[in-house]
Amino acid sequence: MNFVCCFPDPLSPLQISGGNVGFDKKVWEIVEHKKGETPSITFKCHSHDGEECYPGDITVTSTYTLTSSTTLRLDMEEVPKDKPTIVNLAQHTYWNLAGHNSGNILDHSIHLWANHITPVDENTVPTGEIMLVKGTPFDFTSFNRIGSTISQVGLGYDDNYVLDCGEEKEGLRHTAKVRDPSSSRVLNLWTNAPGVQFYTTNYVNGVQGKGGAIYGKHVGLCLEIQEFIQFEDEDMSQVGKSQLYTYLEEANVSNKYHPNIDVLQYWKDNKARFPDL
Image (cartoon, rainbow, N blue to C red; front, side):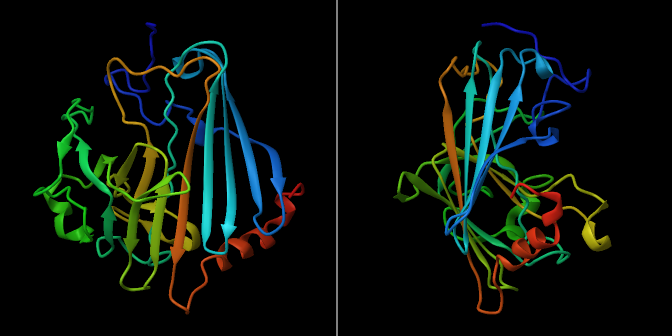
């Protein structure tokens, strides 16, 4: 199928994050919420034929589940309704395990269960190559401090890693493990997606955050589970065929800190904003 895609910048042949109004800028509908030992909430979003120049109607759901006091599970599902279309859902949480307003993540160490990456050209478009990371600054097959090699990769890391060697449990593959030495916090990530985009917040400069904090370059890191990004001959999602990806986050912390305190307090303080929960 051939179709014309519009781009936010007429001087650039690229579109990122779903266009001018991606799913991150839309208001999602709450369709289900459950209480109990493993509370969850499900959001739904519709994208109509021609929206951001993509063909076909598509329905996307995202379900967040607290499977334990230190574990968050995200299930993202896409269902094209009437036309094949291009869709590649990704989770884009920014992590800084040292805590809010604590500086950059260059002292964080990361282990990625990936022996290869998909390299990009000068326009950050994948070349189609699958490149071995051994002996390069992209090698995180064992723990490595991010700041030790980031200066060797231009502005910072923004690369798709091929998840090809992690152990499996319950249908998910171990993807990444992140450590912060100052707080002793550890984050584990598991997924059933084939790739993960490792991104080190390379373009943030002077963004004001909560409490007046100013966020700068490398203030956080992202681990975005995804399909491999392609430019030409992209595989099309077929009509009526759903695709479900799962993102499981496990936090291990020192006894001085409980990872859910801030989240629970936020819900309590903002309960009036969510009367249906």
